[in-house]
Image (cartoon, rainbow, N blue to C red; front, side, top):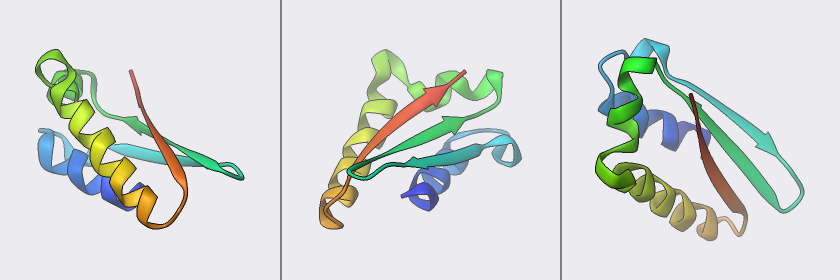
Length: 76
């Protein structure tokens, strides 16, 4: 899951080298933390949060396949 979010985020931003993805794993749920450069934050969130919502949908579908719940948090 961590690699998937990193791949999508690096494709969206202008500074792909400043993309950081951390995974905090729990028993049932894992939290994926995405941190990008300040000037790229709008590109990752998108208009009215559409890009972030799409990333969360893809993450949800992929995590359902491995029978684990994942949550995406975008950190400023």
